[in-house]
Image (cartoon, rainbow over all chains, first blue to last red; front, top):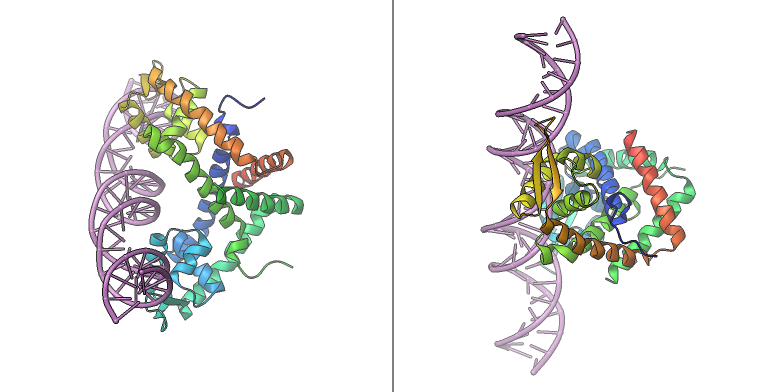
Length: 147
Length: 147
DNA sequence: TGAATTTAGTTTCAATTGTAACTAATATAC
DNA sequence: GTATATTAGTTACAATTGAAACTAAATTCA
């Protein structure tokens, strides 16, 4: 028998949204004030830390952020001196992005902070549950792809 | 051995945020255009559909939305004639909120739509996985409470 | 009681956000 | 080879958002 009444407190898209926003907010509080950096900027830094020399568009594809958001985050980081752009020789539409020394320093400070937060958060779950959650997220993403 | 490098594509707070935003966005597309109603307004309607006569503050507590957001959603719904406010006799700061006939009609139309979306989404998961996801969300919320 | 605090809800303001329209460069098609 | 379409990225604009300050009512406490 399918549900016919909507109980918001049982509705999964809603519950997912609430808990996720709580987590993202708590995490960003760990670094936002201290480094003057917002969520999109941090995500760009994290991507560049792992993949120096990628383009803004690569960041868009890897992060599922909007391209306007990325464009602005990149501009902000550049004006703060945290990253450098270098026009691609073969394709002048693209800019290759790299963290400056200062940007790398910020990355080196925030990354362990973020990992520590994740580790702490996941103490709430057993290793099994972490694996389950990962699999579930993959499946939900697959479903969203096909939708 | 704890992780020492941040892989954004493996970082759970991040993955959770991406998949959740995809889901919320897809769901709201199901009703936003058709009913001229945004996410916060819909959440207020859903709460009132289940709990007629609650106050704006009750909605805030049950939904984890910001009180400014709720205040504006209530005002918007009132001006569209979807809900009515009645000052509480015993405490004139509060307003008791109820859906109008029109508001109930909207609720009656959107609720099955939302439930259908959820049902479709959850076909991606086995019943076991749905139960696991629910338990995991509860545990993560518990962790966030204590943080 | 009457002053100080708390609570419900609103308003103001500035920041963040996404859609759409745009520029500039490259790739494709004829 | 030139016209057309696509791609990278930016800008303009309008809508959404939340923090902070506010009003009005109720509660606490001295």
